[in-house]
Structure formats: C-alpha cells, structure tokens
Length: 148
Image (cartoon, rainbow, N blue to C red; front, side):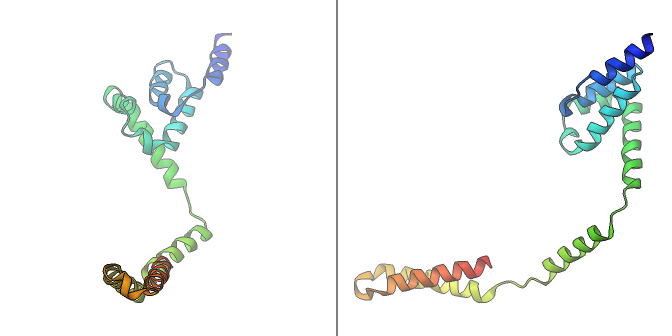
C-alpha cells in the first residue's frame, strides 16, 4: 500500500550535499526516516562546507530541535570513532618530525651571501667576467639547500 510506495519513493530520491539541509527538513516534516537518515549522513560527511551555507543556517533557525538531533547524531558518531594504532603512531611521527626539524641556517646564510654577491657582481659584470655564472651556481645550490 501507501507505506511501501512511500519507502520506494524515499529510496529513489537523489540528495546532493548542497540540498541535504533542505531535504532533512522535508524528510522530517513528511516523516520519511530513510530519507532523513540519508540527509543526516550527507550533512555529517560534508559539515565543513555546509555549516556556513544559507540552507544550513535556515535549518538551524526554522527547526532548532531537528538541528539539535543532527548534532546529537554527529556527537554519537564521533564518540564511536576509535583511532587505530597506526593512525596514532603516524600522528606522533608527524609531530616529532615538525618539532625536531632545525632551521637550515647554513643554507640561509649561503643564499644571503649569494644574493649580496650577485648584486655586487651585476654592477661590475664587465670586470668580473666568469664570476656571474659562478654566483648563479652558488645561488642555485643555496636555493636547493633551503628547499631540502
């Protein structure tokens, strides 16, 4: 009968992320649980881009109770998230790498000397002859050293 037709229609609706807040609102009004859950899943997956959208702002203002349920679902899903050991180890390695990387002072000083030297040589390029390509090579090595 009618419940089966309603369920079939819910399953056929395509929900784009930009439309998900409005679809959630309509699914709640129409008491369409399958469509409501799909909209919630899409909103949760795209919350970063949707949180400032006009449709999400309208949902928050028109249906605060529905928004509260949405955030409760979001909290429930985040509480159920348990990072794996590999993810924790990778995060620790990344933190260690950032904390222990020293500033490349030698490369910085070489680059600074190359720039100053190049400025001096470029004023007197006739008298220095082959020094210009040498300074170019030093500047290139210093730049590569800064990048590494």
